[in-house]
Image 1 (tube, rainbow over the protein chains, first blue to last red):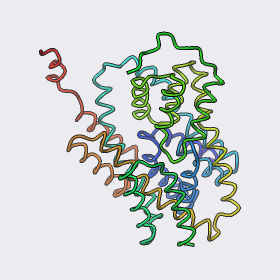
Image 2: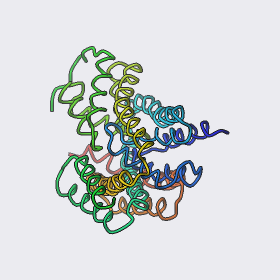
Image 3: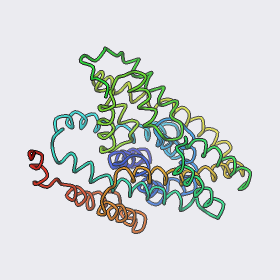
Length: 173
Length: 193
């Protein structure tokens, strides 16, 4: 198989595994694109994830940059569609079925059962970015300060992300 | 709670595209739920708070991102499949264009000292943001010791043992759902005075 069909297949599978949303799929995505197919390096992955943090909208649109890096602009489009379409179609179909099972006990059990797994996967997402992003006391301190501020105050994270970029430029550069 | 509209007003596909496009263009910083509520409940009144929470819950349980799942579900509710497509494209388009521009800049300037330093700072902050969001969500959703054990097992399995997501969902998923399966006593308990 060529890179394009491998890309499409890999991201279509990731799409359907993305229970719990974007952060929950991060460790698996990093594993697939970095360790399994060696499409990009772990540092590239972190850079691309960081670019994604600066953009509005759904937080995983940056997958297009992975596709672009591997197979050009066609790869970018292909990955975007492969990552967003399967889950969206599943949502459309299940959304209609879900309405029919409003009172089913399985529905509540499924939702409450998946919650802790989602939380665990989100923590793993943070760990997988931290493994390469936290490379010294400065970056560790920045992550800790951001965490503390957000737990203390409700604030748009974009301001902290912008400030961290600026501090990175001034101190790490 | 606001009253449920008896007859949903006719909403054009263009309007669905435009409203989700606005959410997709303005929801900087990851807190998309707040932007969704502001538009869908407050600004357009397409949903009341109860409907919003219900659709959000469905979005969170199903695979895929909250933002795009909500666009699909609300679009479908308003105008069927074409509405879902209009919502999805609206939600994705602004951010995708933004990312494409950032990507082009990265292709040109990436690897330079300054860009590496800026992105290094952003990545460090992103770790803090992700952890904070997870803690806040966990506080709301986890209320049993068994939940915390499941969180820990998932984290160890994925980050420690590097097990694949499919393995983790296939083993811990059924256990977690069974742990939350309602007891018969509780189901019939509602009839007691």
